[in-house]
Length: 92
Image 1 (cartoon, rainbow, N blue to C red):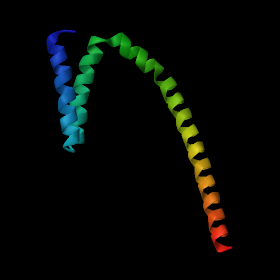
Image 2: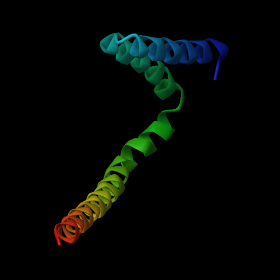
Image 3: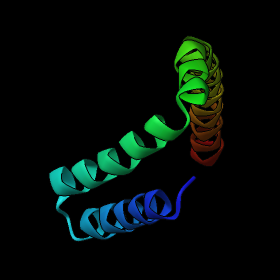
Image 4: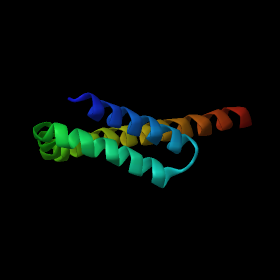
């Protein structure tokens, strides 16, 4: 990658981070988009492969979130039943 492209990518990422931290989200997204566009123009094959693999990433993420939600529900049920039994013990 040429030096000017590296500078554009680094500058846009830095500007995007600063703008996001300052609460200027649309401007930050625009700056990040500029850096991403330069990267895509430099490495089109890599981004094509990533674009083709996105459904796999989404599927894996969905499975992970489903498992986390089931675990959370079980923990919540356990805590609720445990709390109820503690109140019953105190009432006796």
